[in-house]
Image (cartoon, rainbow, N blue to C red; front, top):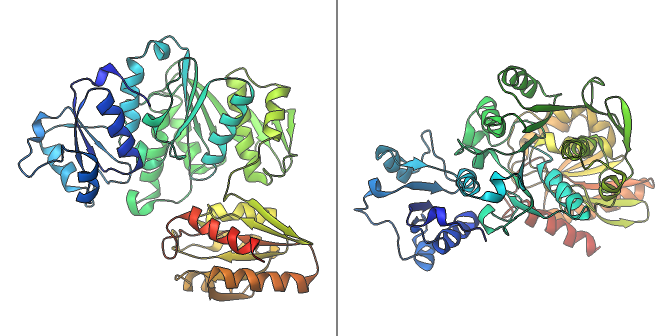
Length: 452
């Protein structure tokens, strides 16, 4: 747990007591801060804190208000308490900025013994941060993997010499202004969380905040094949003095270039794809980002490359669940939008594709070039029409709703096909119509597959 004397006697309101808010509450109490809380579920607040915000609370006494990432802080959906905080001119500060205040009071950070790596993007960020953490530990560095990946920032162990590796969501970045990583990594940007951010441009603006405070000696690593990223970087980098490393799967002139099977640095071969848990062009993009980071930190070596090849991958991301003769079952439940399903559709052959749920985009046409790899489509969940309308004229498409029935039918079809086949759960949609989250959905798939 991270604590600091900097927070002693600071009056701080925590808005929202989920995982992030709860762990922050514990850290601030241990730091001797004066902590007030509010959660829309009053039972949650009462079970955790005695200092629940009353009706006559004097907001002007606060030093900071820290909203949990899921709480909107602007627009018509702004939480009522945020509006009261704004009226009283109290600083609204996110967990990342609060962490920066801690760092600014830490001699280990100020001396350069501790470095901050932050990774954001629409797809691939969890794989990238976990792979970085895996490699650094194989290289015997002290490292702490925190943020949107599961362990909240203030729940982290204290690093005296080494790396904090942070996965940052657009929600977390929305409330940042002073957060200053040493190494900022952007994987890619596509349409996601539009209900919160309203437009793709606003969503991208939140992601680009990881570069906002970079100065001389800091490093930015970003993919460069996405138009919205390229336009921003071209404008932004001319005004800032930091090291910029570009990743591309199209232009060999960029610092790191990848094709369907290899990665090059300055046109020199450095890596060949041979990890069965990291197959596909999207993972070559992810590995290129990690190799660029290793190069920037002077850790690109045969040992670090061996560590990449020993990485076992993450659950729910093209996870190999089981093989029965010529049929392989793949759990890609983390694919919650059509863009994140495309890598699997591109990678595998003779696919029996299980998809469906709560869609984030009405444009499914992005998948059309890859339907040549699909034998049959099974739609689960309640939102079926968009999938049927988009795919049924190209591939046999049926609405089956129930995951278990879809798996059984797909397996029978694959056996009749008698060729190497893939039964792929890659929903291209969120899970909330049927499941608590993508993990629950993926675990349901794995359980059904193991019971065959």
